[in-house]
Image 1: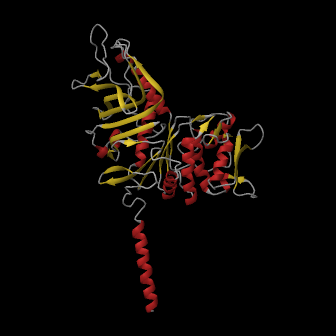
Image 2 (image 1 turned 90 degrees about the vertical axis):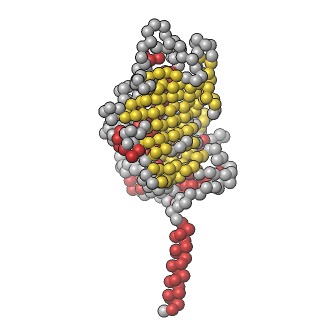
Image 3 (image 1 turned 45 degrees about the vertical axis):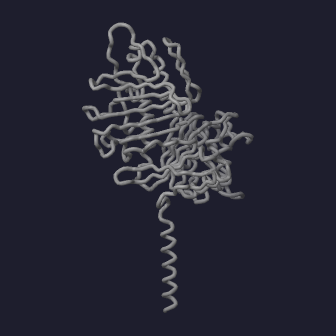
Length: 460
């Protein structure tokens, strides 16, 4: 799970400041304030890790990639290539990580890893790594730090305040440039007698990014017929285009989920159907083949008890729009980080509120008797969603540590991210100005207008 994020000089962000990320993190804000670009950078990091080109420090994308961010100049704050792009990521490891120094016989054991990277524009205007740093931590204490930094001579050096790197005997060969933005090359590691563990840091970074998934705000239109030939999609896709295939794949593998400890296990498709019913969207939901032995499937929906089942294309648009968000929250692998934009789109206010309960359940859900430990980062415009979260905190179902809420706003050219302070009663102690518009101004103006109109009617 990601626990901390900081981004400097990327898109609208001059500096996000340190951002605490909780199991359920929600970002509110006006349009075009920079909320989405935070998730877009993480997508770019993932596609860089997946790229076969080890020399490319940051894969900004093309028509065939996860995301296309344009040129490096497009990505830099104020399009000033003299500015360094820096990002800091910190995540909780799935198990205790141990580093053994074969020369000093020292051991370092931590449960969190932090990565800090600085990129600068090279002569061709492409991003190049000038510094990368790893920290192995136990809670908040740094046990082991590694810094791979470019000197004024443009050569790199490997440094540490807590670990003594020992060069191999013989000629002092220069170190290679980093591979991608996070990996110290095998050749550079071989220049030292005790630097082998650095490959494990890179593998941990790749593992973390491989479990990052993204669902955009615009989902595919529903279809009358869906094709599925037995494949297992990695996720539901950026537009939810693989949501039905994901349901069928989970069903074929007999995945069983429940909503928390001491709750009944359910097959995946039944689990999804029960949530759609609890959200109040429909009464029943079924995915079935159009005929035996065929790879064409249809999605049938019953809107209320006693109604006939119809295809998903013949009911309200909200069902097909919320379905990918629901499926992704429970389909993604355990330990995943899922970034969603506007899951409440096209939904009734009551259903928007119920979505909060769905996502609370998703971060607490269990699969085959084991906690899934899924993290959700939600971009939203829904005050109904927020109200339900505040209610659940007041009721004790969530603690302020379980959730992090931010308000994104513009301050001149730069975006700002303000953390909202929630107390044990669910109250926001630093309510931002015009968080959901100027509601009080509207109420006052409506009251004044009504009074004037009544006075005018009396006079006439």
